[in-house]
Image (cartoon, rainbow, N blue to C red; front, side, top):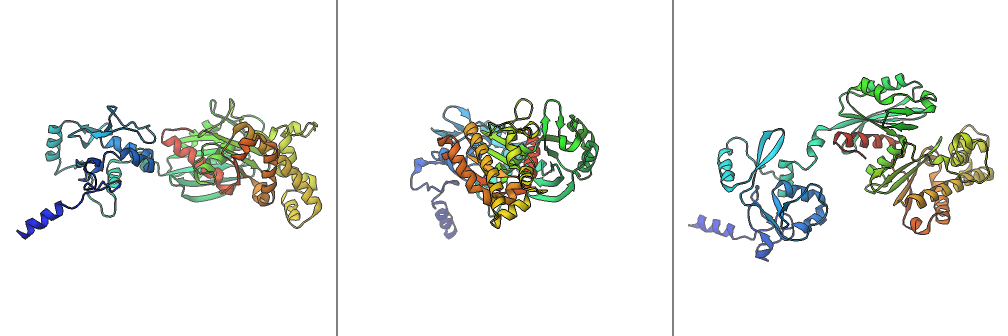
Length: 444
């Protein structure tokens, strides 16, 4: 008798929504009071509100659990944000893990659900075993798999390659952005040597992402990199596919930089970003509404050719105006030095001539960034590259002032200008992001 009373007391304890913890006793109509596959209860009227906190992911889980909206359609995989109205769940729907072309199928009738429950209890249960320390919603995700989780289990590691004018960085990167086996090699001067260096470090990876300093044409698979492999185009994609025999994705280093910063850097999560790389040359990566802007021939972002001076100089013919006035070689040339680092060091110590040279380069850079802000209306402009890494703290405030002066006022007021958070590794993470998205069946 005592045991029966104790059990009755346990059943009378308040039951709560497994997501928002709202009590049944507080509002009985508020709770959808039918057990789910883990024996919990889920709040009916608040499911759409949960999507505000959990985002698209909870909608995807709801679709897998058989939830339906009052509009008499299942929650679609592409739905975003809360859906107004009433939610319900089909009676008797149970999930069955049945191998047929690698898909999960539902048993949709009550009788079939009961039969499957009795039949499969001793062999392959359709529900997850209780796991200590995990919320029931997390157990659903673990048992059924979050949408896209199959890709993450399969695509554990990719090879990222950042081919530069003087050095090539190679590393393995996983889906969480963890970097390993990082190597830096002198850049090869022939295509065969470059491909051999990449193939020797590829190992067992799901895909390879490569970014190059030049123009890559996706339609043909040819790359034009005059600082590396001569003035002609080379069949880069064909050579890599023949040596690696795995998925290969190639893009310009400009695209890699902006992808790296929006994935793991200072612009993380933003959809409208411009990355300005100022080093040996000047290049710009552009992300517009989450998509890379490449242009008709992969040349979009060649901002070193911006016309920022009305007076023509012969040096503009080979590099463009902005690059000829503000890139690292321009700073070194104005000071009669071999590179820009001594000029930056002298400017920090207060040398007047060095300050004037660096100030001139900063002024041109501010004008170029202002043009980008006016043309693309980004949420953020990220500054990186060799010259910025060495002198960014000295140049940043002046660049911001020039952008405010020259750019469209509303666009500049809503645009942040920041230094790169990833530095020289932005390209590696961008190449990894390209490879991971290719393995998942997407493209940026």
